[in-house]
Image (cartoon, rainbow, N blue to C red; front, top):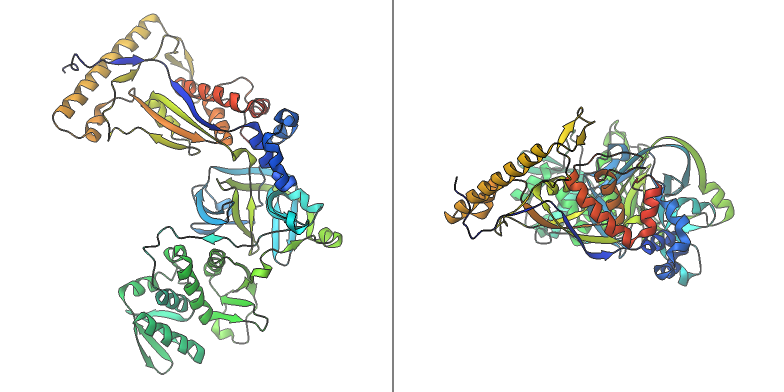
Length: 568
């Protein structure tokens, strides 16, 4: 194998470079994010306050104070409602931003831990939550009207003051507006889910009520579909798209559902979908209350999601069969009640007597659950009753690091799904001839069994061999890389011959809680409650990141140390 051109200087390094290029993080970030729970808008005073006077609060928050839900609570995800024990952490979770935008977000952390002790039960007709006492609830404390605001409030505070809880509401904006369906299409799909069935290549309806027949005729004409009638049976001659989605309106057990893609349509389309559903199995009471009946538990939950994205809220409950049992057979019937705007913020504990009945302490033994999401708010339900709730104060900050290290470090680093990464690409630029060679202080010899390895220094001969062989291999690999580039081979193909010792660079952005999690796993430190034995190269990067973080947030770093280097 030839060597690189004499003009190409091969560089060998044994160091790692880490620079903090942007640090929007300070101990006060933790304080005002936590104190918003009790001080509301007055927590803004803590942005510039002396954090050293509040080390006790930081230490308190560090001691695993992430609030959690019981195992009967469900959370709304991109795959529908899931009980917490079934959550993997890989789902997209429905969240709400501070401005009220409803968005899907990935979890930064999944919490599952045993709990044996008190839980706070908040319960009334349209509220049902069972959470740990420190769980942060999205609520509005009763004050003078001009001072009321939505804050994240510890559940224990509900025992001492009256609050409102948001059942739903929010602003939904679809990601793909170009892929939206016409209004009549959405209305007819909703109507089909309630009253239709597939018959060969057509969608059929058995209708008796004049209002249903009129709705079908009107929407079919608006969509440009033909409609035929034989007695009380109506056949809709629709296009291929409608026929396809009609088939997707059944799950594996032939129960009716709303196809996932339709639930991510723009608001106008979702409103038409809801209109079609309500014209089939929906009803409106004399007081204006809207209800929908179905034997599909999944569909009932989807109506809650649909109502949420329309800025409303809905409650699901089992309902007794009506006077026409043949309509539902022996299946369980679910009643979905859609709440009006004026009922979206139910009162909890509005009087002392009500508070004693509606906010109680229950002993709980089992596991509790939660996830951390960037927006800090999740949509959950218990016994079919939904609400928005929130989580951790250690994530209202951000740090961006520039890192130069060999590729072998980055491949270890990127196993952590708690940060945002942007690495230089060998597809678009020629890789530099810079390679990692272990320095003389690097222990080279591995001893022990898997899971219990120790590394010892090694001999001078072993170190010399390591340096010589590594340098020779890297020179040959880079020569091969240049030869392929000279022959016109694309960079993304030629880079395949380069070793993982090749230096690359990346930006990595994370918050303090994520960084603590990273440090707990990638540094070996006396006093750690859970000892870790990382590869030395990634530990060299982690040590430099910790130095920068400790400078930005010294009190939080000290609390991390005192807590056994366990992330909160």
